[in-house]
View (cartoon, helix red, strand yellow):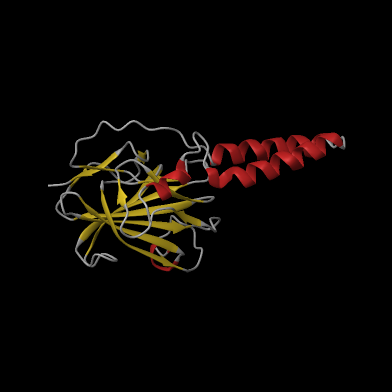
Length: 221
């Protein structure tokens, strides 16, 4: 696959292309309700339309981080920082940083570090609440194994949540990925786990709010 293939799917700024069918359908139903004179229902549908637009927003981000810094792949709250002995796909010891995205957060995901996509691993699963520990083991998820330009192994896992039923990932194995660029999203509340080298310096704390493509999670040695 050419390098530009997956990037062509992320150019709907400041609105994610994945949300266009939802927004269009909601606007159409709202319009019909207004024509029929159903005032109360129309206002409810206007609210739903605004919420859909808010959910699929895709704001630009500015990165001023150092070359050794790994950026957050998602907007949300850090709900866990844990040492892992055997990282999925890479098999190396790492530190897992878990980020929970509520339905009010931006759900477009971004690449944490420039490099080459070594492997993709999609797994079907259950739909536990994404902020529970069991979610990272049993929920539907999609893993990306990135080997950075400096040779470090980073694994990013998109985890579906209680409401989320669709994981979107645009690049494929072998693609060159660039730090901060969009690579996919998860619809309607979810979680992203980032597995970073265990010897890196962690710059975030549990409970901190982070911004995808902007907040530095850690610095590589």
